[in-house]
Image (cartoon, rainbow, N blue to C red; front, side):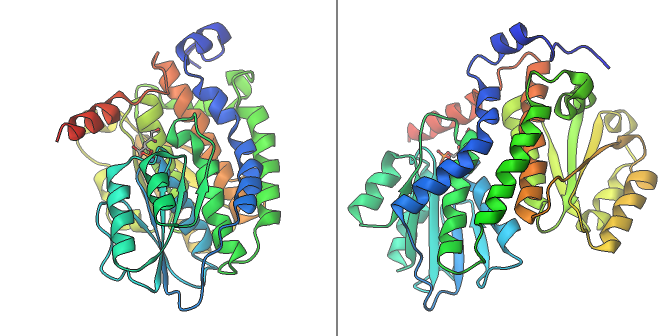
Amino acid sequence: MRDLYLDDPVRLRETDSSDMLGAIYGLPDQLPAALAYTRTQGVRLRTEGLLQIVITGLGGSAAGGDLLRGYAAAACKVPIFVNRQYELPAFVGPATCVIAVSYSGNTEETLAAYEEARARGAQTVVITGGGELLRLAERDSVPHVVVPTGLQPRAALGYLFVPALLMLADSGLIPEVDEELSETVEVLHRLRGLLAPDTPTAHNPAKQIACHLHGKIPVIHSTAGLTEAAAYRWKTQINENANSPAYAHVYPELNHNEIVGFDVPGAALELIRVITLRARDLHPRIGKRIEITTQELLGPCNGVEVRAEGESPLAQLFSLLYVGEYLSAYLGLSYGIDPTPVQKIEQLKRRLAEG
Ligand code: F6R
């Protein structure tokens, strides 16, 4: 295995100067903390006449929406949509609940969608760390959950996801989640012992995958439904923490298009490595599809498979996601990049603010 300095604590600390690894280590602890403050702040959804839920947000603040849709779709009494733009879908009206999520509270697309939800008479709730969105929620007496600040939005995933999850569970839209949350925290605590910087590359799957992906373009495959959100999160975390391109696609859809695309151009294909994320209890035909695709169709682009840990769907989802959190930071560090800053996002926001 190449020495990418991932086992050199001094170099890791120097490069990771804003401590993204510390934030990732803290993710499991965000779940019980968020459970406590959400229950204290006690936001309940009105379910009478409710036909749809729309979670509106961008980037790290939309990621919790993806997880919720992936996790709750199988059990939720109403459909869940994730909206990532200024406008809301045409169906949004008084029978819709719009959950507006922005960690900074200042993301212009989310603020516009919030105003539109109010104008259309939708039930509106807010999850935010502050900013303009909190000011608007207070002005409009809109129920809101305020989350702890001081992190990059993408590093606050637990803080942003759990309030939305509990809103659904505590309103009876999905079955009670407390046990699954406890198992998820247990699994993540166990996993971080394995994935954290103190565990050397020889025993650390996240560092090993970082070595495997170093110099390559990652393509993350998972399955539609539960783990789809984990694959997309891997992609965006690799983008933001490692400053690298990355792409994600899902079974079985990828079997109907993407697999044909692993033929030419040869030189570019040498750069691609496919990581497959796999939950337990897959539909048997999906299992078969993964086997044939990885063993026979991806050729040299085929990389490694990451298997979910834990029993409950929530624990499995977070276990897959958590490997990607560490992997993306290690990959960035292996390139000598500080994983925390997102200069291009900030530059774009500044340019847009100029009018
Ligand atoms: C930065 C990040 C971004 C932001 C996005 C929206 O860490 O993850 O994707 O989440 O620019 O900003 P917020 O979350 O403040 O609404």
